[in-house]
Length: 215
Image (tube, rainbow, N blue to C red):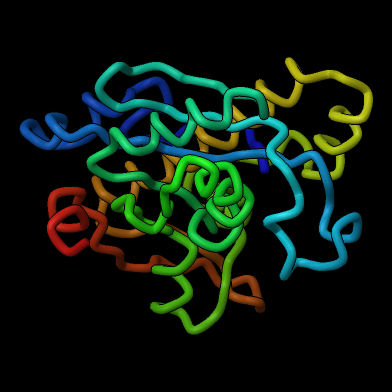
């Protein structure tokens, strides 16, 4: 998952975490997280076997340090340690997919990723609408963003040893994830389109202090 942002009219794309959210909230360490895999669902026998897909690249945006951190498979334990420092990890389908891929590495460290305070935007949106929306759909409608590629391209890059391309691709996905969350937190809604093409606002309550206290 990866997109290029021409971010929202208000606030602008280049405004980062500390500029968009209310003062005081920035004391929390929010880690926006996404990963890419070495193998596809077909390679491992289905989506119920994500634990066999193996980490290709993991990327985190740290709200306090205001920068990206990237990890390859040999650094999986460092990625787990980084996630453990978070007051809140934010992702999209992170609970089922990203953590599912990463858990075998965490298990070797005798750690369960479910112990990390995590907010999964996909789960929250599914609860509100009664069906799932893709990150790309929400990004296009809310942020005027568009995916630059797809996961199949990332898998091909891995086979070709083009790790740097996967890292940049994953960074763009983390940027989308971060900016969608921040838009929702700041505005109180995200935008989507119905199957008939009607544009709608979906009210959300993504205030980080509330999410952290509820976990």
